[in-house]
Length: 116
Image 1: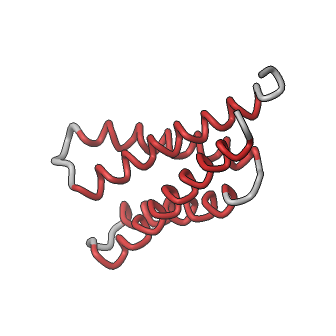
Image 2 (image 1 turned 30 degrees about the vertical axis):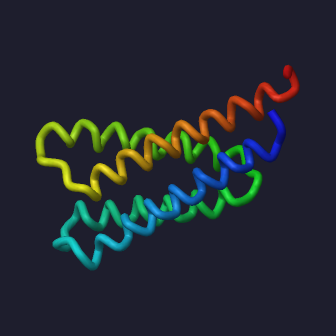
């Protein structure tokens, strides 16, 4: 697979994680301020930093963008059974899963590029 194809996937993952981080931080102004909201905003700030890293060429950022959204998606999915999911929670969960899958695929392609 040519390099530009993985670059497109990396740009899609960057856009998704930056939008997700922005909406996580924006919740501070729209949701009741408590400990969970502050933790969500901190997660959003880490997403913004990961998004900045994904705009470069770091393989470490790809690992972070695979692991952190996967863990967040797992936590959100376990929380879905106890409450009625809102549209924002569904957006965050789908964005987390999409970013994790895109970055895992990019890691696989960069690891096995020499074998093609």
